[in-house]
Image 1 (tube, rainbow, N blue to C red):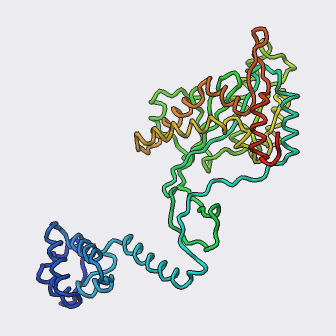
Image 2 (tube, rainbow, N blue to C red):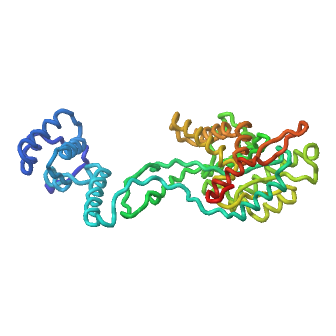
Image 3 (tube, rainbow, N blue to C red):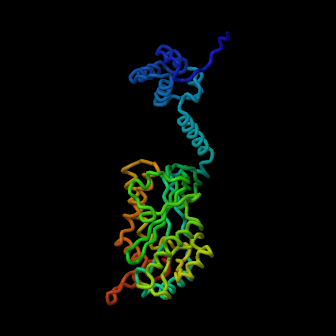
Length: 393
């Protein structure tokens, strides 16, 4: 029978005796350091070899003016790097490399605290904005408030690393360049509410990545196709097929319900939306036109200023969702969906919907008991100053 010594699992190895620790550390460190470490180890009992090794490593690191390496621990106590916290090992080794790299390239590279990068703002065309205003004047002003519909998407995802991080950056990097791209965690949900200037909301669409829906989702009291419409999207996002189905199943039935009592057969409803590719499918646009739905697209890259739901609805929605997430960390599908739907309901109350339109310069006037849309010139000028700050309005 071979008497070769084999390393077993750390938890099965017997605890090191203090005499053994004292003798081994004395080979390298001064006597007073060895005594200090042993006393500290004895102050907090450990119940496995792995716990003992981790505590030994921590106490050595806490000592001032000494060097401690993992190779040293391996040789003195016959342990492997894997017996110590792998994460801690890479953290320390990575820090040493960074410090060494910075010492060698201190004139070119430095470490800076960087914040998560938000979506960049691209230039908005002045001509497109002028054309958009002309369409509002021509098609939206003086229309009944119940015929003006806005659709937009808001997606939710937990960003586990969305916090300031110390990152290597060029020494000449400006404050605005100190951003980093946040990684996706693949748990994506997209909600698409459709709100009206009169304050109403159509059943919102919720897109999830999972192919299956837990049976408990509707056990919470959600009414299918009334409180929310839940569909699967391969990426958890709105695509052409999903948007087309939402137009056919929700938007057009609402417009048809207005005819002929509230909206004449030949009168147009208004749909305002952004330039997402899924919104501009030729077949979907043709169906909308044949149904007397006038399409008004906001200028490209101007959602943060001119998109109705971006100006208030989604801010309230995400705020409500963050509050409920802080109160409960349950991540099951049923809890996540319930929180998103509850946040959507809180963000799309009639008064908030009207306020969202007001932020985007569309307000309501009462004319002999009938409510119509007009443009708030002060709000419009404020939006234009935000888009084109160099041009006085």
